Length: 98
Image (cartoon, rainbow, N blue to C red; front, side):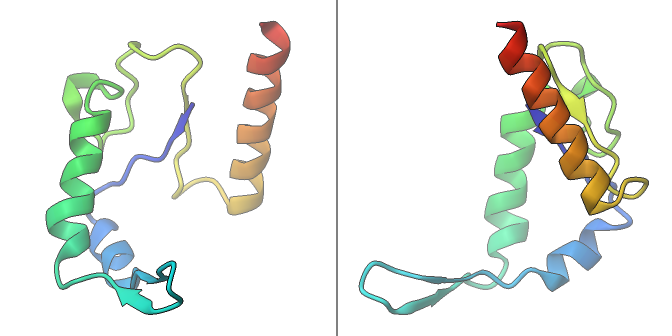
């Protein structure tokens, strides 16, 4: 399992850059409704992941120790290539240790 904490100073930039556009099964474009990320997705992420982070603080990035094999990646310190390599290495460790 991997997780990306989201420090609040950077969340507004991330939120403003996300524009969900998807194609439904009929081939029609569907756009996220206004405030979808802020009011639906982000609160659901917090609820689903609060057990992973110390004191339920998803912004801190500090593991609660409740999740085995957790890899927390600091996206502000780690580039995409290094993050992908870390996740792949962790997956290999988990798969081959079972």
